[in-house]
Image 1 (cartoon, rainbow, N blue to C red):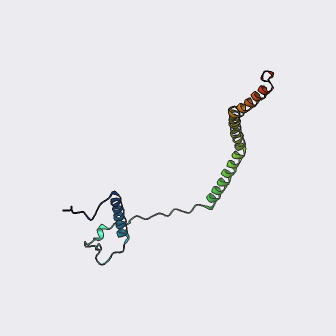
Image 2: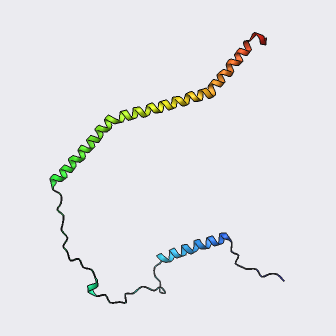
Length: 139
């Protein structure tokens, strides 16, 4: 007699898909408009007026800044921008020169290292071939 087979074979991929579908369904339920079978919370307890917090203190309005203060802030902003521009004009060339010199030095070092590694070997090979070709012992 054949063994009964389970019509619902559960594979790891199926379980992962089911979990993902359950999460998606839960998300949709949260954003779904309440239907006729959905319970809407209703306030059932009476609320006394004493339980509601009430603002009793007066809020003082802060006066608007004086026009002179605003002008001082504008002047300060202009002064700061001018000082920053002057500082950059003075310091930037020196910083750029130092950085460019370091970059030039690194590049020159790399060029020399690569020339020694590749070009020197090629030139040595050519000189050796020329000397061998002109060596009277090889004739």
